[in-house]
Amino acid sequence: MGILGGIGPDPENLMVMRQTADRLFGRGSYQFSVLGAGRHQMPLVTMGAILGGHVRVGLEDSLSLGRGELATSCAEQVSKIQSILTELSLDIATPADARALLGLKGAPG
Image (cartoon, rainbow, N blue to C red):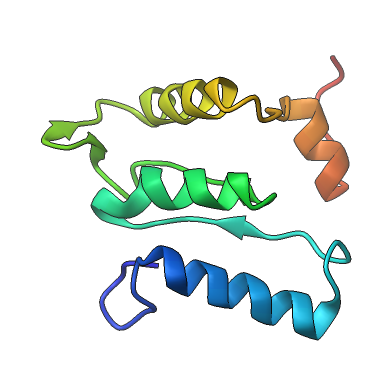
């Protein structure tokens, strides 16, 4: 969302995409994640999390940390979205949780 040639980075578009998936697959029968490009990254992934989706942030999608502020690392963006979602009382997956959800192997512990 928010990439030239892609769907616009508007909350309404995210809602339409979610409603379409619910209609096609049945609410709760699928996993979804949201990523936003550029300055739209944090608002869109926050909305996606509120809707029950997974989020992804990183410098490959946005160099911004916030309005007029460049991120210095992916870890800085992860820390920011973690703080936002924690303040909203949303659960944050641990690396082990994410591996289990995706059926991936990983280092023990």
